[in-house]
Length: 197
Image (cartoon, rainbow, N blue to C red; front, side, top):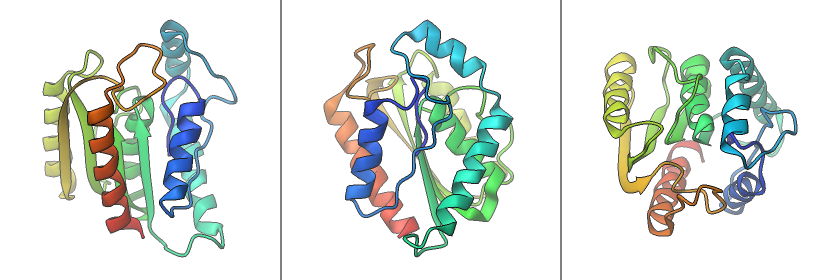
Protein backbone atom coordinates (compact mmCIF):
# COMPACT_ATOMS: atom_id res chain seq x y z
CA UNK A 1 0.00 0.00 0.00
CA UNK A 2 1.55 3.26 -1.14
CA UNK A 3 1.07 6.54 0.66
CA UNK A 4 -0.07 9.97 -0.44
CA UNK A 5 2.32 12.90 -0.53
CA UNK A 6 1.50 13.79 3.09
CA UNK A 7 3.74 10.96 4.32
CA UNK A 8 2.88 7.82 6.27
CA UNK A 9 -0.04 9.44 8.10
CA UNK A 10 -2.56 7.94 10.49
CA UNK A 11 -4.97 7.72 7.56
CA UNK A 12 -2.57 5.57 5.54
CA UNK A 13 -1.90 3.37 8.58
CA UNK A 14 -5.67 3.00 9.01
CA UNK A 15 -6.11 2.00 5.35
CA UNK A 16 -3.37 -0.62 5.77
CA UNK A 17 -5.20 -1.91 8.84
CA UNK A 18 -8.42 -2.10 6.79
CA UNK A 19 -6.62 -4.25 4.22
CA UNK A 20 -5.28 -6.51 6.96
CA UNK A 21 -8.81 -6.83 8.39
CA UNK A 22 -9.89 -8.08 4.94
CA UNK A 23 -7.34 -10.90 5.21
CA UNK A 24 -4.42 -9.42 3.28
CA UNK A 25 -0.82 -9.22 4.45
CA UNK A 26 -0.52 -5.44 4.22
CA UNK A 27 2.69 -3.43 4.06
CA UNK A 28 2.91 0.37 3.82
CA UNK A 29 6.53 1.34 3.07
CA UNK A 30 7.56 4.81 4.21
CA UNK A 31 8.79 6.64 1.11
CA UNK A 32 9.48 9.86 3.04
CA UNK A 33 11.74 8.54 5.79
CA UNK A 34 9.39 9.39 8.65
CA UNK A 35 8.45 12.85 7.39
CA UNK A 36 4.75 13.82 7.70
CA UNK A 37 3.02 17.12 6.93
CA UNK A 38 -0.46 18.56 6.54
CA UNK A 39 0.74 21.55 4.52
CA UNK A 40 0.13 21.28 0.78
CA UNK A 41 3.13 23.36 -0.29
CA UNK A 42 5.48 21.34 1.92
CA UNK A 43 3.96 18.07 0.66
CA UNK A 44 4.44 19.17 -2.96
CA UNK A 45 8.07 20.04 -2.24
CA UNK A 46 8.74 16.69 -0.57
CA UNK A 47 7.10 14.82 -3.44
CA UNK A 48 9.23 16.73 -5.95
CA UNK A 49 12.37 15.82 -3.99
CA UNK A 50 11.59 12.09 -4.05
CA UNK A 51 13.23 10.70 -7.19
CA UNK A 52 10.85 8.38 -9.00
CA UNK A 53 13.65 5.82 -9.49
CA UNK A 54 14.54 5.78 -5.78
CA UNK A 55 10.90 5.37 -4.77
CA UNK A 56 10.39 2.57 -7.30
CA UNK A 57 13.52 0.76 -6.04
CA UNK A 58 12.31 0.98 -2.46
CA UNK A 59 8.91 -0.40 -3.49
CA UNK A 60 10.55 -3.22 -5.48
CA UNK A 61 12.35 -4.16 -2.27
CA UNK A 62 9.01 -4.14 -0.46
CA UNK A 63 7.62 -6.60 -3.03
CA UNK A 64 10.59 -8.93 -2.48
CA UNK A 65 10.18 -8.61 1.27
CA UNK A 66 6.49 -9.48 1.12
CA UNK A 67 7.17 -12.52 -1.02
CA UNK A 68 9.74 -13.73 1.54
CA UNK A 69 7.25 -13.77 4.43
CA UNK A 70 5.85 -17.09 5.65
CA UNK A 71 2.45 -15.40 6.09
CA UNK A 72 2.31 -14.71 2.34
CA UNK A 73 0.98 -17.91 0.84
CA UNK A 74 0.37 -16.58 -2.65
CA UNK A 75 3.03 -15.61 -5.17
CA UNK A 76 0.70 -12.86 -6.30
CA UNK A 77 1.21 -9.33 -5.00
CA UNK A 78 -1.33 -6.56 -5.25
CA UNK A 79 -0.60 -2.88 -4.88
CA UNK A 80 -2.88 0.02 -4.01
CA UNK A 81 -1.94 3.66 -3.64
CA UNK A 82 -3.35 7.14 -3.36
CA UNK A 83 -2.35 10.40 -5.09
CA UNK A 84 1.47 10.21 -5.34
CA UNK A 85 1.11 6.57 -4.27
CA UNK A 86 -1.26 5.94 -7.15
CA UNK A 87 1.46 7.12 -9.53
CA UNK A 88 3.91 4.75 -7.85
CA UNK A 89 1.37 1.90 -8.16
CA UNK A 90 1.50 2.30 -11.92
CA UNK A 91 5.30 2.62 -11.91
CA UNK A 92 5.64 -0.53 -9.82
CA UNK A 93 3.31 -2.48 -12.12
CA UNK A 94 5.32 -1.35 -15.16
CA UNK A 95 8.65 -2.13 -13.47
CA UNK A 96 7.83 -5.46 -11.82
CA UNK A 97 5.86 -7.14 -14.61
CA UNK A 98 4.59 -10.59 -13.59
CA UNK A 99 5.32 -10.01 -9.88
CA UNK A 100 2.33 -7.65 -9.64
CA UNK A 101 -1.00 -9.37 -10.19
CA UNK A 102 -3.27 -6.42 -9.40
CA UNK A 103 -2.71 -2.68 -9.31
CA UNK A 104 -5.17 -0.16 -7.88
CA UNK A 105 -4.29 3.51 -8.34
CA UNK A 106 -6.53 6.06 -6.67
CA UNK A 107 -6.17 9.35 -8.58
CA UNK A 108 -2.51 8.62 -9.32
CA UNK A 109 -0.34 11.68 -9.92
CA UNK A 110 3.26 12.75 -9.57
CA UNK A 111 6.66 12.16 -11.05
CA UNK A 112 6.36 8.37 -10.83
CA UNK A 113 3.50 8.08 -13.35
CA UNK A 114 5.14 6.12 -16.19
CA UNK A 115 5.50 7.37 -19.73
CA UNK A 116 5.20 3.78 -20.97
CA UNK A 117 3.12 0.85 -19.77
CA UNK A 118 4.59 -1.88 -21.95
CA UNK A 119 5.90 -3.76 -18.88
CA UNK A 120 2.52 -3.95 -17.14
CA UNK A 121 1.16 -7.48 -16.71
CA UNK A 122 -1.16 -6.76 -13.79
CA UNK A 123 -4.88 -6.26 -13.99
CA UNK A 124 -5.55 -2.61 -13.21
CA UNK A 125 -8.52 -0.98 -11.52
CA UNK A 126 -8.27 2.81 -11.31
CA UNK A 127 -10.35 5.24 -9.25
CA UNK A 128 -10.35 8.80 -10.53
CA UNK A 129 -12.28 11.99 -9.78
CA UNK A 130 -14.25 13.90 -12.38
CA UNK A 131 -13.52 17.20 -10.61
CA UNK A 132 -9.81 16.58 -9.98
CA UNK A 133 -7.79 19.79 -10.09
CA UNK A 134 -4.46 17.92 -9.91
CA UNK A 135 -5.18 15.38 -12.63
CA UNK A 136 -7.99 16.40 -14.99
CA UNK A 137 -10.38 13.59 -15.89
CA UNK A 138 -9.42 13.90 -19.57
CA UNK A 139 -5.86 12.91 -18.67
CA UNK A 140 -7.13 9.98 -16.62
CA UNK A 141 -9.24 8.74 -19.54
CA UNK A 142 -6.26 9.07 -21.88
CA UNK A 143 -4.08 7.20 -19.38
CA UNK A 144 -6.63 4.38 -19.15
CA UNK A 145 -6.57 3.98 -22.91
CA UNK A 146 -2.75 4.20 -23.08
CA UNK A 147 -2.32 1.45 -20.48
CA UNK A 148 -4.79 -0.78 -22.32
CA UNK A 149 -3.12 -0.24 -25.71
CA UNK A 150 0.50 -0.53 -24.57
CA UNK A 151 0.20 -3.41 -22.12
CA UNK A 152 -2.73 -5.46 -23.35
CA UNK A 153 -3.69 -5.73 -19.66
CA UNK A 154 -7.22 -5.87 -18.32
CA UNK A 155 -7.85 -2.23 -17.37
CA UNK A 156 -10.95 -0.71 -15.75
CA UNK A 157 -11.08 2.88 -14.51
CA UNK A 158 -14.00 4.18 -12.47
CA UNK A 159 -14.81 7.87 -12.42
CA UNK A 160 -16.52 9.57 -9.47
CA UNK A 161 -18.41 12.81 -9.04
CA UNK A 162 -15.82 14.05 -6.57
CA UNK A 163 -12.62 16.11 -6.21
CA UNK A 164 -9.06 14.84 -5.89
CA UNK A 165 -8.32 12.77 -2.75
CA UNK A 166 -11.99 11.93 -2.17
CA UNK A 167 -11.05 8.72 -0.32
CA UNK A 168 -8.99 10.39 2.42
CA UNK A 169 -11.23 10.89 5.46
CA UNK A 170 -8.48 12.92 7.15
CA UNK A 171 -7.72 15.10 4.14
CA UNK A 172 -6.63 18.55 5.37
CA UNK A 173 -8.10 20.11 2.22
CA UNK A 174 -11.57 18.72 2.97
CA UNK A 175 -12.11 16.75 -0.25
CA UNK A 176 -13.38 13.58 1.45
CA UNK A 177 -16.59 12.24 -0.07
CA UNK A 178 -17.89 9.36 2.08
CA UNK A 179 -20.31 7.82 -0.42
CA UNK A 180 -17.82 7.76 -3.28
CA UNK A 181 -15.05 6.61 -0.93
CA UNK A 182 -17.12 3.63 0.28
CA UNK A 183 -18.01 2.59 -3.26
CA UNK A 184 -14.43 2.89 -4.51
CA UNK A 185 -13.08 0.99 -1.51
CA UNK A 186 -15.55 -1.88 -1.89
CA UNK A 187 -14.66 -2.17 -5.57
CA UNK A 188 -10.94 -2.12 -4.78
CA UNK A 189 -11.16 -4.76 -2.04
CA UNK A 190 -13.27 -7.07 -4.20
CA UNK A 191 -10.81 -6.62 -7.08
CA UNK A 192 -7.82 -7.43 -4.89
CA UNK A 193 -9.55 -10.50 -3.46
CA UNK A 194 -10.29 -11.78 -6.95
CA UNK A 195 -6.75 -11.25 -8.21
CA UNK A 196 -4.39 -11.69 -5.27
CA UNK A 197 -5.96 -14.18 -2.82
